[in-house]
Image (cartoon, rainbow, N blue to C red):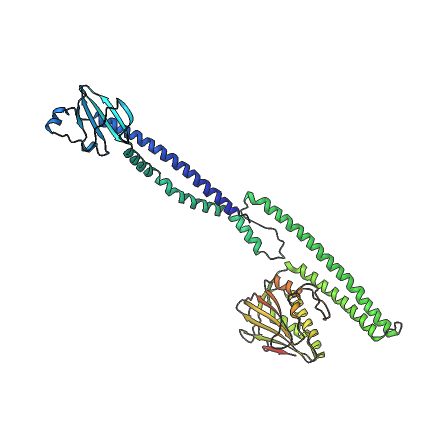
Length: 454
């Protein structure tokens, strides 16, 4: 995978590093050349500033002049008189030949020398210096010249890192914003201030989101219209069949009538699920406000009490980790969506629980929020199909009816987790919506107890 950040950093750091190396080499060469000129100037200055009273008699009588101060750089000084006789030579060095006037470079006994000679009125002066000494001194001087550039390289790297990070911050923000968006959110992307380089990309994304929103709206409208149009003729067809059977105009055996009634009920249930699904999809942008999950569960348990009594099913609501007896288990949610969700969960649980069974609705406070759980004592779901029960309109083998995927859709819309698993302590299913965001609500005075059973 190509990384723009790594690409920029690689080219900038390597490019600046190469430029710094070339610049350092150029500065080093220039410093060495200037050092050579400086040493040539030193040779000339020493030659012209030697005392005039140095003579052959000084050498013969053993008198030495203090020339150490100007000969610290291994300068070799030779002085000849008019007759060509050497009247002075630097101690501790071998005598050098006469190289000629001006600046000269010569080889002597395996050593390279740089010399300057000048003819004066009564004598000839030559000052020489080994090239090795000049090179060592020139390199030392050049290194002292380029060391600030060496220290500048890590500073440049840090500046490049900061500039690239700052320059790519809008891209990182845009990526993070897209990653945190809800899968159902089709709102336009806003970025302030908008960099010119990203404006075209954001405009294209917003255009795509607008087209997706239009397509999704058209799909929801079609599903809602189709479901609404199907419900009425199906209900009328069922009534006509029942009327025809009642007045004797339609005579079929009980088995055939049962099949017809079952398939017709499935069609009506499917149309109702389609309509509920369309309404839920259309309500994705509805305002989510504080609501009492306890009140919603109590209302739904009351609505299903007659259906539970008809099958002798023990239907109840239990509260765990309640803050007090009047804890409303207030969450941020859509009241209508949770009414549909609880209705579907209770309808499935009661429908698949045998006569004399038990269905429990549990509200529990957990570390990451409030959990809504429905437990039943039905047959459960085969382990091979447990992962697919949340798919829309998926039907388990051997079970009547189909699901609409509303539970998963509502949970995702509320940034919660929808979990389905078989019970391990008994036969049955556990369906949970966990991680619902709790909020603080004003305490409500109720006469209801913490456990409600039918």
